[in-house]
Image (cartoon, rainbow, N blue to C red; front, side, top):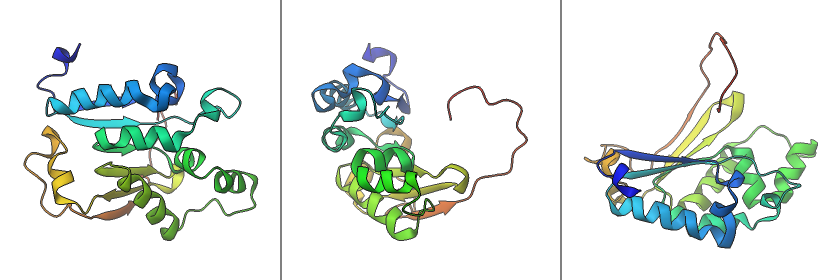
Length: 179
C-alpha cells in the first residue's frame, strides 16, 4: 500500500536475497516497488544480505538484478563481501579462502563503487565490517537531485564525495538483531 509511504522522507528495504519474489526475474518486482516509491518523491534505501551460496539465491545473476534495481535506489548499503559475492565471485572466493588479502584497498573500493554508481545508485555505502564504512556519492548532479525528499535541498559539498570512516568503539550490551 503506497499510501503508507506517501510523505515519508526515506523508504528503507532490506535483504532481498532472502526474499525469493524480490530477486526472481532479474529483480523485476523489487525494481517496480522502488520505482513506485521514488515516483512519490521518497528517497529509497536498499540494504543487502549475503546470499546462501547453496541456495537458489546463491546462483542468481546478481549483476543483472542490481542493474535492474539500482536505477531506482538512492542509498545502496551492502557490505563489501556481499557486493563481491554478487559482482566478482572469483575475487570473493579468493578473499574468503585467504588467497587474496581480505583487507580492502582504495583501488578495490573505488572500482566496486564505480560499478554500483554506474548501475544507477546515487550514494553507495560499503560496510567493511570491523574496518568501518566506505561512502561514495555520484558525481552526477542531476542524479543526486533526483534522490528524493531526504536530499531536498541538495546537501552542499556531497557531489562526487568519497569517504572512509572507522568503526567506533562501543560497549556491547547484546548482539541480537540485524547489523
